[in-house]
Length: 151
Image (cartoon, rainbow, N blue to C red; front, side, top):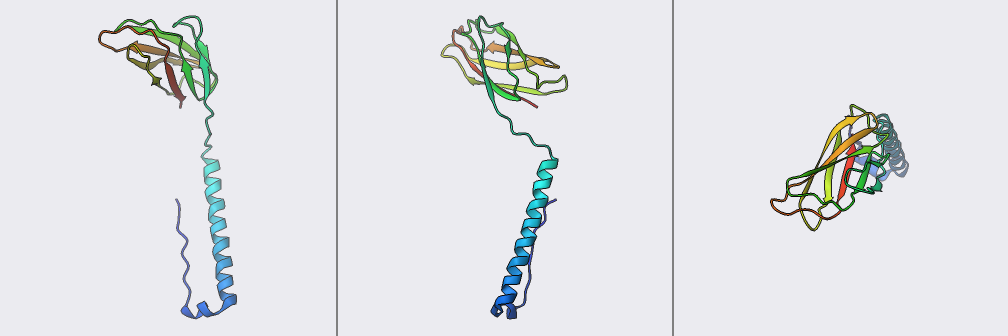
């Protein structure tokens, strides 16, 4: 819970330089104490700053990738996915556990086709990415970028 710091003083203090200095010193100490308390709260929340990583898929659309980061970008090979069809590949990632939630999105669609991505089979050390071409009549023939985050 955050609290606000309030100070009150009498009008006669405005003309007393020593008293004004003491008020400023007291205010400064109180603010520093609150900031220290807030810093300890943030540390206790165990927040982690995620550094995104990047990997490029090789060989073909079913080739798995390894990327050991909580966030990242996966660039696929050029996908030759017919309208309504899917491609699936495995992502090996040491930051993933069976209880993790993994969210993936398409960062860049190809020039042909329109893609969606979903995640399946989350397990210790891996998850599957399913890429679907949802364009009603156009096959894909382009690489796409997939963003993900492990929660």
